[in-house]
Image (tube, rainbow, N blue to C red; front, side, top):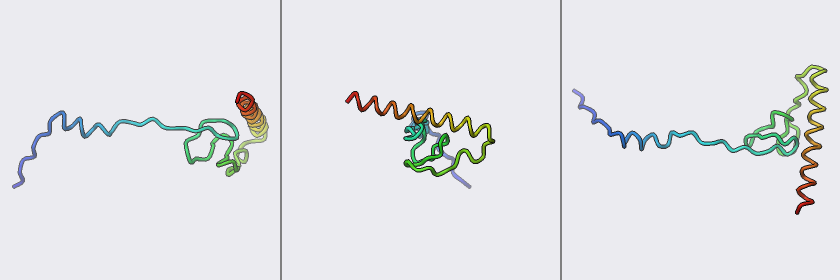
Length: 91
């Protein structure tokens, strides 16, 4: 016959659950488009990883969507370059 299990106190339960809290995720910025990206992941916006284009994002889009996406990407690149030039001029 099995023995009875001992009841655990509230403090013991709390100590066990202290490690169950969710941690905040850390995001970096894409070097090409400036969008926030999780570390060690391909940018979902432009498809680059470590400065190289890994995925052709425009491949699955229709002709109209491709034009809009290309314009968007060019504008984002201009903004990031402008931000880089401003940061260099400040230093």
